[in-house]
Image: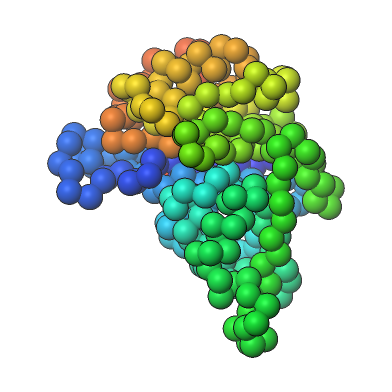
Amino acid sequence: MLGIFLGTGSFNGVPQLNCSCRVCSSNLDRNKRLRSSFFLNVSGLNVVIDTGPDIRTQLLRENISKIDLVLYTHEHSDHFMGLDDLRPYTNTSPLNIYARESSLQQIKNAFPQNFSSELPLYAKTNLIPNLARDLEKIIFKDLEIIPIPLLHSQSINSIGYRINNLAYLTDVKSIPDTSYEYLKGLDTLVIDASSIEPNPVHLNFDEATCEVEKIKPKVTYFTHLSHDIIYEEFDHLAKDNIYLAYDGLKINI
């Protein structure tokens, strides 16, 4: 499997507008973060997890000419508002998207032109919405995917995804006990570590590190990074096989 971090930033991206902090002012490419999204080539299929408002730029940068499947973690705008940019990928074949029921409804509300049965044929897109249910396997061609329930905020929960021996868990504040069983034996864990200081709806560095110690993957990448985090100051994490992801990072899984 080949994984590409299309984006590794938090809600506002980095640099954040109207901010002159040392991270937002940094010239280092690895401190510049588009909104979080992940690409995976597995079993001959191209899978994208989340399509935030930067997805067009991200897909062009990586020269991705085909998408077979899109998985959504939840309905916050930084994770789905680029959906309309997927239209060109539906010109020759349907594009299946999977999300929780609440997320699908929010997506349909935001982009009625992509899902309304009343539109004329020329205006419709070939996006196929599918329901992702907690811990129920998604079977797509030769691929098995497990949606992993996560706790994000008081009003919105999210789901991560396990694909083979990779798990992608972003926008998480805590992991329900029932989910750990499905996170055993991972080669690669990608997990939310949005900030240094405590955050009410995201894991911070210390909390994410505690989750890594529980899950025990072979290697971990922190993502959904805010402007709290300056890349060059966290090399010490590598001693525990924990790495800061950065935009454009490619990993073999």
